[in-house]
Every structure is written in C-alpha cells, then in structure tokens.
Length: 270
Length: 336
Image 1 (spheres, rainbow over the protein chains, first blue to last red):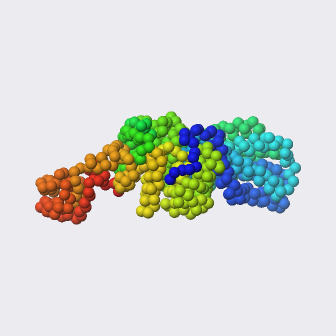
Image 2: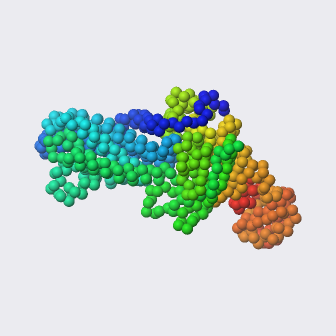
Image 3: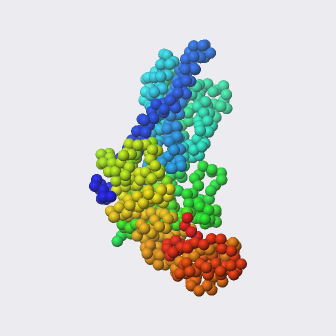
C-alpha cells in the first residue's frame, strides 16, 4: 500500500490558529446543514411568545401597548441564550456519547482545551445568528415600537457576545456534566426556570413588588442579558446599568468556564 | 535502532467510583479481574516497562481487563498515567502531549467516525486538524479510500458503512496525516473472518512501509502471525516479551491436555503426575492441566488416572504448544 501522495516526512507543527480554524470550519459546515432545524429549535418558542404577548394580548387589551417594548429585548435575550446553550450542550452529548465521536478532534495536535474553547466560539456564533434572526421577525410581528432605538448598536453587540459566551459555557458544563439521558430533564429543570425567572418577560425593576425574588433572580445570568438588551435597545425603560451587566456576565461566565472545562477534561482524559 | 516508544514504571489507578457523582464515566479497564487498591481504586497498570523499536510491529496480548486499552490510552495521550513515564516518538506523553499527537495515528477499539460528516469529509477534516491543506488532504483521502477498498463510499454517510468498512475508515483516518507510529486497539474484534484477513493484509503493508505499529489483541493467532514481538500482559503487568517464535519455545514442554472433571481436580493430581510421559500437571478447580510430549497417547492414561481417584471426565481439550499454552501456563486462564 505505497502512498504516492507524499506528505512531509517530518511533521512540522501546524499552527494552533490554523487547527482552531479547521475545528471551527467543521462546526460551521455541520451547523449550516442544520440551520433551518437550528432556527426552528431555538427561535420558534420565543417567536410564538411574541405572537401571543406582543401581538394578540395587546390587541385584546389585556396588556398595555407598551408591553412590547419591555418584551422585545427579553425575547432576544432568550433566543440567544437558548441557541448558545443548546448549540454547545446537544452536540457535546453526541460527542461524548457511546462512540465518543469527539475523539478525532481530541487527537488533533493542539492543547485539549482549545477543542472546548472552539465549541464556545461556535456557541457564540449561533447565539448571534439567533439574535439577528429574531430581532427583525419580532419587529415585524409586533409592529412599530416607540421606545426601540438603534442608537446603541455597540452595546447590543457587546451584550449579545457576552450573553452568548456565558450561555455557551453553561452549555459546556451541561453537555459534559450530565448523563445523556438526563439532558432533556436538565433543560426542563434548569433552562426553563431560568427563562421564566430571567426578567425576559418583565423588567427587573418590576420585581420590586416581590423583593425576595428581586434579589434571588440575580444568580440567573439571563437577567443580565435581558437587562443589558433593555438598556441597549429600549433605554427609555427601566433597566440595569450596562456596567453591572458586563461585570456580572464576565463573573458568571468565568465560573461556568472553570467548572465546564474541568468537566470537559474529566470526560476527555481518562 | 532508536526506540519508538519507551515506558518506565508506568502505573494507572482509576479512582474509585463515587456513587454521588453518577455522571462520571466508569473506567474503561474496570474489568472485574482488575486488582483494587486500598481506597477501592481500580489498578489497571502496575509498573509497566516497555520498549518498542522503531519500525516494529508490536503486539500487546492479554485477556480483557489486562490493561491493554489503558496502555494504549496513555501512549496516545488519552489517559493520564498515575505515575511512571512514557515517551512516544521522542515526546513525553504528559509534558508534550501535543508533540505525541502530531506523530501518531490511532485506530480505536470501536469505530468512532464523525457522524455529522460524510466518509471523505471525515478524512479531510481530520487532516485539517493536523494542518494539511484541503487540496492535498482531498487527494490523499481519495487515494486512501481507494486503497482500503471503500473508494466508492467517499460521499456516503458513515452510517451507511458496514462494521468492516467503518473500521477501514478509521484506518484511513489514522493514516491521513502520515504518522510514524500507528496504534490499533483490538482492530479485528467484531469483524467477520474475511474482513479480518483483509485487515491483516493492510497492516502488513503498513508495516512494510516502515511504520511502527502497536496493536492490542486477545487473539493468539493474530499476534502470532503479524507481530515482530509480543508483550503478554495480565493484571496490568508484563508477563513475557519476545518474538512469537521465542515465546513459543518458552511454552511449557509439549502439548497441553486439559481435562474438565466432575469435581476438585487436586484429588487426582498426584496420580496424574505418575503417568509416564506427563511432564507437568496442575489443578485449578475442576480443571486439570497436564503437559506431555505425546498428546493423544496420554489421553486414555489420564482418563484412567482421574477415574482411579474417583473423578469423572466431562471434557477433554488438546492444545499443541503455542502462545496459548504459554499464556495458560503463565496466568492460569485462557485468553477469550
């Protein structure tokens, strides 16, 4: 079996960046094939919410017309959080499943952490895609929103990237730390409460009516994504300061990464 | 000749399973036979010293749970050793895992292709992880698939491949970046005899190209036919290491005749040892093993000897001198 396509005799070290690019390309190729399913899986629920709470209920007069302005940033936060956490956690379950498909990437001549970090980057990209998809859709369904402004796009981008990073790292922790059979349960038990108590459907200020809850929800990273979005998209409404949002997201993502990478290495290295 | 692989006092203890952390993976080598240390950890390797020469076809032979997969895991940087050292292609598996990975190809025990990609993409992307440009990788992938007889499956989904074809895809993947050392963990388990023979041919060709091949197996015949040298391991320890021919010469004299009795074999042992022509005999439970130069002629004498001690013979098996008889003599158990 003589190989006629000769490669180098002595392997030279491929650049880390180049390998990272290859890992990223693999995930982008796979994600692009699944893009419609991905969008349905991660944005259908938020969009349905918009139809009911941003379109039907205001028209029926059950909620005020202004509710849409409070809802929209939260919906975007939910969409990007859901898509980031899922796009890391779900493939991880298959990767570390029965056949350990991830092995061919773990054998790449780069530090093992780079494989995990690449997954985070993919999760952030998917979060961005979801946000970019949902924003115009929501605007379309809800009609004009007075308070909505495009003046702080840099802040929108910052919150999106930080939020997507935080939730991608949560996806790493969930995808590597949980038995595959329990991943569905984990979404019901962890992600669903996170969404409902994430100040996505109401501003954090509004929780002053139940002070205990107002401070309890501060452990929930979605609160900061939603509030950050509010500050950037509808600054006229009550919202947290951008600095608080950025600081909290950096701190929480640091915790998720520390725990997530430990869990990843435990699964990857025997 | 420089060594492709050298291990010194290599030891691996898997942590004891913690009941609270149900999601932690059970150790791969946690077979029931494996010894357990003081804290309930599973000792998979206890001080393994090995040297594999450059260009050698090296076999690791042992029963399930002997520590073969753990050894391969450590050498391929996939399992962290508890203590000891291992150097592969000049790089330390712990300190320079990246350097090791750059020079090795790995064929896993179970095919684990990337099921999100098609057959050729599996190869082209794996090559890309090693920094090989797309055009070169595609050409080499096409050629490897052709050589391994799955050229027509290049654009198929990996799920459409048979077990044997998936195994070949794994071999192609291990070769795509032209590694110096190839590791194969039980590559023929689950293959039909025809596919096994085809794989042997592929491995011989790779060896002829001058690559170092390290293969684990629990098939005696496979090790005997393919390997330059064989290490026999059990309970995480090296029992013997030599060429197949020299190992066979070490096998206890003559043919092994194994009798299965209706009860404790020890009772018949003294009488069996008196049988002329029996060089050695040992009992283990209801199994009585006698070694003699003339296999067949001893059978009636052995049956009579056992019956004289009140035992009934249920089964008789003959093993000509082989790696298997050596293995049984060394470990007291059969390979499979």
